[in-house]
Image 1: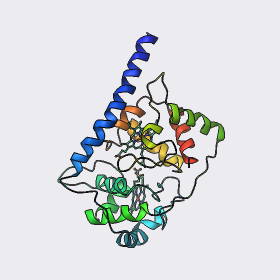
Image 2: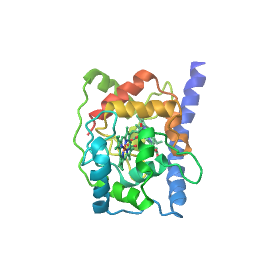
Image 3: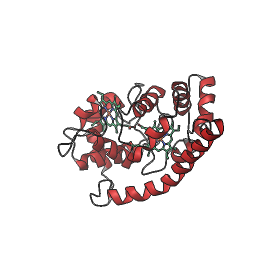
Length: 224
Ligand code: HEC
Ligand code: HEC
């Protein structure tokens, strides 16, 4: 039994590695017709950010409220994609559900979303610090090595060893509030969040325990 499980986990890990390459190509194709992720104007983005978003994400995107994500230093393309995903379009429901952010994106055009991405990506993220050292150490093992027994791949493979991510598709995680990260991982697990192309994050988190989610989120909050 144990042997079969390890083999199936290995298959999952190999599949993810292969998928990683195919994924990049699919996205390049998917985004070219709309040119949705072309660079924006950071000054125009700053105007909206200071008038509309600063109350929750801070003027420079370094949110101090644990439920609100830090946006400073996040990749522009990822920010634009999330803003698009929060918006219901073409009579289809929003791909990423959030009552708060759904209201925020209603007045935003695609250009506004690109401009906001351009603004936040230029802001410097403030380094975070993990509060619980023991928990963060457990999290570091998952982040760097995954869990071979349950088939969880290392996060560092896609989000990079220092958590800065790999633009344009793999978001920056380093220094993010642990509460926000854990909420997102749980949302992927329950499929409340389902905007990850080819289910990549949902497939991973389905194999993680609640304890592993808390540990890896704690580690990420202090990663720099
Ligand atoms: C009332 C508070 C509030 C305001 C104002 C607000 N946000 Fe948010 N934002 C949130 C919360 C809460 C989330 C997390 C949503 C979730 O749980 O998925 C979020 C998530 C996001 C995300 C996803 C980040 C990620 O790492 O995936 C982006 C991008 C974002 N907001 C941009 C903006 C922009 C741009 C504005 C202004 C136009 C704005 N927000 C205004 C509360 C707010
Ligand atoms: C095969 C590549 C891959 C691996 C491995 C991976 N991720 Fe991801 N992750 C992604 C992609 C792609 C997204 C962006 C999904 C989207 O477009 O919304 C993402 C998004 C996320 C987000 C949401 C970020 C935000 O700001 O809302 C979190 C949190 C996250 N990953 C954590 C992890 C953790 C923890 C691990 C390890 C247990 C991990 N990821 C492993 C590809 C990966």
